[in-house]
Image (cartoon, rainbow, N blue to C red):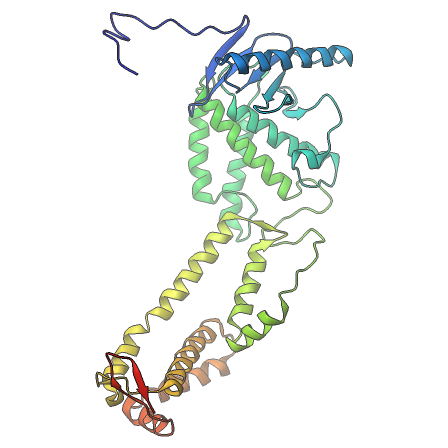
Length: 388
């Protein structure tokens, strides 16, 4: 492609691309182009109908939908619009109807939840929140054509975020999807968007947040018989997956550390749902523990320098000695782990006694321990030959 002389200036615009009668082009705030036919019912599609082949498919399926509505004698409200998604390779088309008055999606025939990849619901009201989530996703993707009857209920959304902010400030296991600081920022964003609801960007972000709230209500079983009131609360009767004998044996060999972390992960991954803020807190605690344990590396280096058996350039210890050293390191790290989580004063006192005993000179006790282990010396370091 080349830039023509005076293009977009004195030479004017290029010849516009034409759309079928009644169709208009719109751009979503993030840049996606979509098309709307102002008819009854209104048709929306993100298929690129500037292409003649795609345009022919869309017009064909739009006529088919209108024919289906007439055949079933369905009277769609003016607040409804039909979305079409024709297949590129096959002669079929996906569709749904979005109703701006009731804030839900629906279809013109019975549809199984498995076809839509929607998880099981426990009631019709629970299903309504699921369809509400899908509706707000539709508004987020197609906010630029000023649909009839669109109501964003921004004041209600602000009130929900105010409650979410206070819930996180007064509870450690809140199920609200955003923490207090994030809620405060979103309240400021919503207050600004409320002043510009004629702008597609404002509609897009309000719809996105409504979608998050609707999805959260689906996950917490909002207004159902068993509602999730805490992020680690179990409300579903899911079978417990056994970890197996290998995990149990490995956990015993590693002083129960894997089992401890598995229990923490079970609390984070409740009912196969992971809330963002507990996961972040869990990973922050893990990083702090890892950094604490790694902080002992300088101590081990100083111990090496203080021990006569570690000063020589050749390898002065055998495999049994190396195994003893690694066992000592792991045991010391586990002692730190126990000390950090200990609640029994006698356990703390015992570990403190061990810590005081370990202050004895390194060479004195390591020499006694190493004296009972077989010695091995590497005579030819460059060839890696070991002799016992």
